[in-house]
Amino acid sequence: MKQKLLVGIQIFLATVIIATGVTFANNQAGSSEDPLVAKSYVDDKINQVLEIINTTVGSDNNTSNNNSSNNTNVQISGNSFKPVLVEVGQTIYGKEGTELILRSGKGSAVVPGAEGIANLTNGLEIKNKNTINKNHLIIIPRDDGRGVKVSEKAWFLVKGDYEIK
Image (cartoon, rainbow, N blue to C red):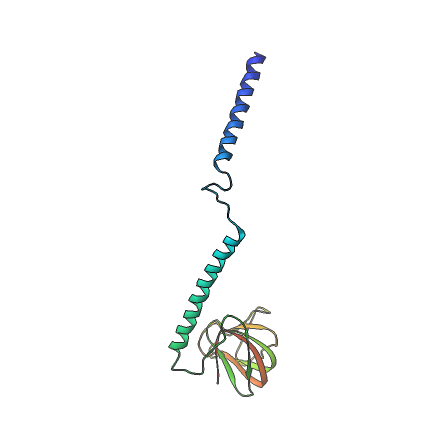
């Protein structure tokens, strides 16, 4: 009886080992199901995708420039922050999604409605005529005339579309 049990266990273990070996042999790295690739190949593919994305984003920006030809004051700072000087008495108006950071000078919010401008630095909403804090990231939520009126010559970092009047 002990011998039959021992032979049964041996057959079971042999079956498990063979099944495991067959499973791993069929899914080896480098096979058609799991190919190996060089880092340079992956880098090349990533660069191709980034090039397509940059081309698409660039053509979208060109389209928006052409569509706004009737309003020549609209400027586009692109995908990075651009330093912008705004003189006393002028107002910088952001388009939808424009990001502003007041670096120097003084300004107050211009908000035509009841809602304000989002201050992401402290998580609060800036209402009409409230002071804009230096070095706080603010986002213009809609293209409805929201911006910052400058009371002391100011430098802003701007990402997105804006207009100075």
